Image (cartoon, rainbow, N blue to C red; front, top):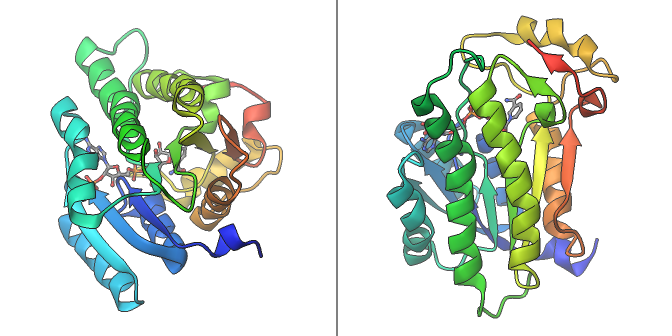
Length: 254
Ligand SMILES: NC(=O)c1ccc[n+]([C@@H]2O[C@H](COP(=O)([O-])OP(=O)(O)OC[C@H]3O[C@@H](n4cnc5c(N)ncnc54)[C@H](OP(=O)(O)O)[C@@H]3O)[C@@H](O)[C@H]2O)c1
């Protein structure tokens, strides 16, 4: 194992109280100096997670912000810095997943999805890059944005979401160029990992044949990919598709 892999980093994970964000927080906490758990409405789940991580010996904070608000997104990093100190890894995991076809979505739908899923990660990332600019750090700070493996195709049933994830894909590359050499920016594009709200495992089972590997992924497999992007300091502007190969097909979905 290299020295960098042993280095403890400070993390901010957005939308970390449940699901993929929660697994990331628990897994990454093992090699963290501090983990900041951001949430919007899941306060008790966030506090429970913080307690679990703290009980295992890692310093943890929780912080609330509604990322649909540009002002709250703009201020979040400064608030985090004030309570937890400098952050080395920003994971833009928080997201909304709304149904709506091109022929029916409203401007409000588009704005809400663009703000939460693309512009908030952008504002957080820009604050992160500014705060890290002149900081002496043992590690190269890194941003990890969460996309969706369907960005290579067309998700007709979730158009506002799809548009926002595509925007974040473009922003990831721009950020990698603009924030270098002080900060790296990469992305994870998950495929079938967890069923969306209101659906169960059977929903994923039905869809898995769309993956060349004919399987469903796990939040632990997402962590492995995130870990690689954190540890390898020669990688920036990269997207790792953790999706059983679904992005290779680039289908129209729905
Ligand atoms: N699950 C999958 O299989 C899958 C597939 C493709 C892509 N992804 C991507 O992977 C990431 C994690 O997926 P997931 O399914 O675990 O996410 P999720 O459960 O849909 O959302 C994660 C968290 O985002 C937070 N959030 C939503 N709106 C917010 C707002 N306005 N302000 C602040 N926080 C807000 C929520 O926090 P609160 O609960 O505190 O309100 C929520 O718990 C997402 O970016 C998602 O798009 C997931």
